[in-house]
Image (cartoon, rainbow, N blue to C red; front, side, top):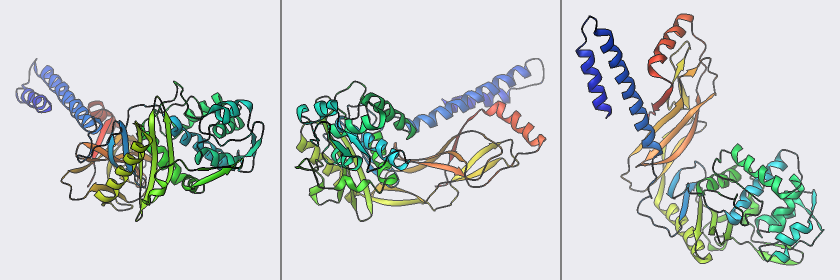
Length: 422
């Protein structure tokens, strides 16, 4: 289609003669060219954001799954990773993140005590017959102990007590959970309670849960080790960590399991081997054994079948962004760190990269200003996205320079896609 439009525009220009029809032909040709540019932009965008395909012939029984590199976010495997699903107790990853954030912000301390209300005890404690830390009714429990009850024992009483202590009631806390998810860039996840128990408002995707796990690992190194603790005793009741990956000697040290009738058996797990940390998120399995088996299979496949491929050194210019109204027409773009991607060993998949931004970027441009993102594509799937920033400053241009940019943009428009220097 694009080639046909370009040929049509070229023909119109070639047939142009001075006279009463010349201006009309030029206008028509310009319009056809604009259509060609628009079609090209749409084609480029569709090639990046189209339907994802399963990787490398690997098959999993999990209806929805994703495997990522915890350092870079490189996607090693995905299957229906953007399909909303009931999170069950996997929602407690978000519950914990809100608590961690409150502590880091200075609004909460580990020694602060919250009371276990009758509601928390009845709906999440012993009478509920759900996962519980078995905190007695009306007892006061330190935040640090409630966190262990939440993370290690998956205690619903701990989740409700934390929610009520922080936000007054669980409903307000759930609103805070969803708001916090948006702040972290998780646009599809919503929460109706702090426990993950059945609620129509509870919906997550495996991609966003993996990103949430990655965020927790990187942002809260002081709290992440709790996820790897093997047991916790409260009210004289000793319970083992529910994560089935921890005893398997594969470097697993987190993070959360879940089960409800709606969501099936789910797992967000992470393991570290030889300096490489992977995160797996799966949901919808039929049994606890199947959940453990599929989580381990995905991690084993990732550790044994992939290797790192460097793309850009730290500080290396990755490409350029068009600048509008500046003393220069473009600005080089860099990432915050070296960029590498995990690829299958002996792969024949083509690796390509594209810079995506909205532009042209209006001057002045500050050094370090966020501009766009680098998308790395392996085969037909986007495997990595990296934020890009301006490598240097661009000052405002002279009046003639700005006038020329105005005229240029009338014909080109605002959507930009650059090619990385891969």
